[in-house]
Image 1: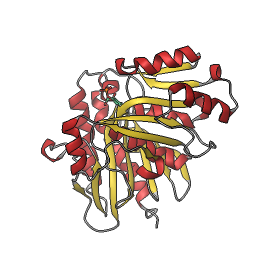
Image 2: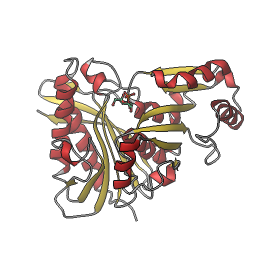
Image 3: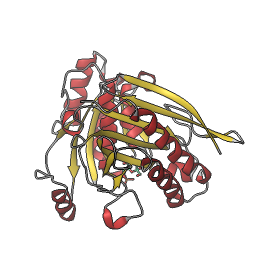
Amino acid sequence: MSIDKDYFKKFIKTTEMAAIGAFPFIGKGDKNAADKGSVDKMRNELNQIDMNGEVVIGEGEMDEAPMLYIGEKVGTHKGQNLDIALDPLEGTNFVANNLPNAFSMLAVCEKGNLFSAPDTYMEKIAIGKNLPKNLLDLDNSVEQNIKLLSDAKKKSINKITACILKRPRHEKIIKSLEKLNVKIKFISDGDVSGAISVVDAKTNIDIYLGIGGGPEGVLAAAALSCMGGQIQTRLVLDDEQKKRANKLGIKDVKRKYNIDDMIKGDVIFCASAITDGDIVDGVKDLGDKYEVSTFALHKNLKIFKKIKNYHLK
Ligand code: VTB
């Protein structure tokens, strides 16, 4: 089974409108207002689509409404049964501070095929295409993983580039990378783009690793699954979060997830840039209309597109 091809354009429009929703807040220092701008537009678009949609990865849990919460039903209740992972504004700091790489994004699978990760931290390790399946493992040392990657890519270790969120929690990993003389590309936020960068030859990034948001890990997995990349993840949970994970149906909280465990079957992934991104340009105000650029993928149809559309004000 595939996701009906007619949905592709509709989901692209959804992230486009969400990006436009955040646009007035670029550089205004207000993360929450920007987020709300995107959420409201995204919900409005989703609810116009003929589908039985359910948010499985969202902005919070039920009591945190009016965010697009986990379990929220979206669409007109006619059409295919779809599960949706969304991040109406990935990179709230980027919008607030007018920095590159803020996106509105979502991923869609058929019902039951998308891992419903709780809004907690997640360990991640991602690599690009044409590499042996499940080459790396979160239980290996950084040294072992880099060596495996260097051998598989026939690229010497000092030419390998690793991307990682700049956070104190990564001190140990960063020390290991430095000792190996690996090139490091630090990012301040936005680890979906960071993880996806491993499949973009232009970035020269060979591996993404470290701890970031769980929802962002699944969104990255959706994009990587369309592009032939790999990612392995494991939730990082305190006792309270373990209970929440159990409620979402996760029994083994220490489980490692490979890409096929998180994303099954067909998937659509759309990311519209709000501020200029490495992948596509940000929203442009052309006076009477907005220009919006989207990076859009449909796995089964092998569609991999960068699309520019215009929306009248
Ligand atoms: C990442 C990144 C997000 O949060 O998931 C990160 O993708 C992880 O959380 O853009 P901390 O900021 O607590 O380290 C963001 O940076 C913001 O949601």
